[in-house]
Length: 152
Image (cartoon, rainbow, N blue to C red; front, side):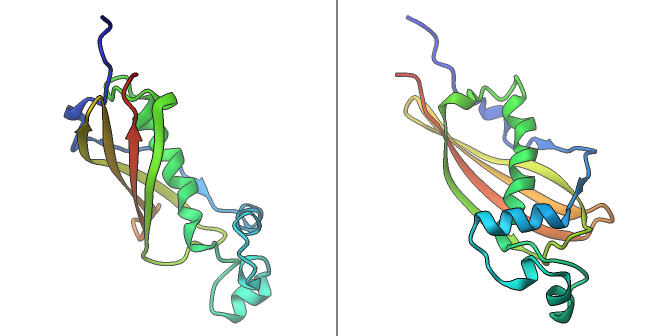
């Protein structure tokens, strides 16, 4: 009988930080806006964004998922986590935007492991990604729920 691998509950409270700075570019915002069918001109045109009071084009509210998922990779790749990514199902994602993300922003993300709940042979993992400017200004908080399916 093989040993069942599941999420290590001792990772609760662990924080993953990165020195990587994410440069928010106009084209990335435009591509994301097109992909999510956000059609407002502030996502595409500098003049429209500036007329609305922004310094540059504005990302749609869910743009933060790009940063959250990039940062989550550190947790998933951590050998101590016990996470088998091939068994992960994305269960829920919530955003709290503290201010809009605009082209020209330089952002960093910190991942907090808030909870691991065993569910039969699998587990539910709750993470919180705090996105800030390099100067420390809060930009967005993302809360992710990942179900890691147990082995059959």
